[in-house]
Amino acid sequence: MPEADRDASLEAEADLPLAGVRVIAVEQYGAGPYGTMHLADMGAEVIKIEAPGIGDSARQSGPYFLGENESTFFQPFNLGKRSIQLDMKKPEGRRIFEQLVAGADAVLNNLRGDQPEKLGLTHASLKAIKPSIVCAHLSGYGRRGERATWPAYDYLLQAEAGFMALTGEPEHGPLRMGLSIVDYLTGITTAFALTAALYGAARTGRGRDVDVTLYDVAMHQLTYPAAWYLNEGHSTQRRPRSGHPHAVPCELFPTSDGHIFVMCVLPKFWERLCTIVGRPDLVTDPRFAEPAGRFDNRDALAAELDAALVQKTTSEWMALLTGQLPVAPVFSLAEALDNPYFAGTGGIQEVDHPLKPGFRVVSSPIRLDGERMVARPAPQLGADTDALLGELGYDGAAIAALRNDKVI
Image 1 (cartoon, rainbow, N blue to C red):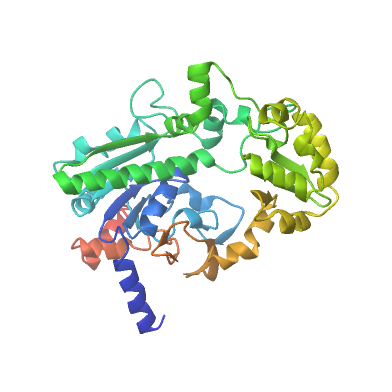
Image 2: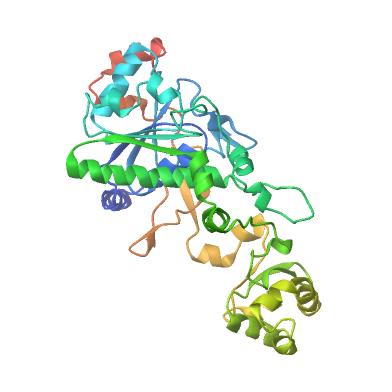
């Protein structure tokens, strides 16, 4: 990188909202790393603690690899972080960890609920080193109670929290969502909670524990269906065509070459749809004139609209309906990522990964002053071990001894 570009890059990083904040991350796989990736995007220095020689298990997650301990899967969860190999269970490893804590603002882990106390990752364990330290714990079910020792995975939470029961067509069995949505939402929630606690610590000088669980986040996402059930006894069910629980038409429709999703959530959208598809008579049809009638006669309405919408391609309907009512094409994963609109918004960036220059990643969804933040590659295993130890005062001989003893 030319010196001028490097200086500009460093200046941009120093201007990020969390610049100067240091987070120690004892994390694995998905939910925790996804949360700390957002912190790194916002300028925090995230130091990822990894077991010597092994590292985050996500590094071995196939089928695609950039090199040894460098899976493609690992990259999008760990952009912009630093990595230190450290065995925290060895006395010298623990001392190094505590030295890192002394210069940090927060410690985040996504371990099983009974592990943080055993490993000394709680505020009670670390406040003597730094009273203002924030200790964030992302676990499956929390650090207390009968499930503290339970491992947890996204798919299990989608099952138990009712997500699968709400997904799919009514005539088929429950389905999970295609992405690990509970992991991602829990990571984001933890990143928010940690940032809020950091603000409080900066104001008062007192740190604290912050707990977020996959189970609680999954249950919290039930939102209005939960309110309907808890207060009215109404249990939301799956709708045909992935339809809205009550608004009609608000669902998938076939075209001549695929599908579109139409959302007539307001009367004006319903009227425009009927006009554009050449069926203005449906607006005054007694069965469909009012929202309640459209809901009660939704199958008959779908049949009428199907006959019209199947006459044109998805792109033809998008050209006619866009700007008139809420509508979207139903894309495959490849079509979504190859969408010219996505490229035009800067949705994909290239990062200069040492094992694969030009490695492409999806950009952060957050813009600062209207601009996308520049993505940085995920670290190679232990890439920053020597540098971080050097910052703590260890010389070359001491580092070599630690490596010989498998502390690092």
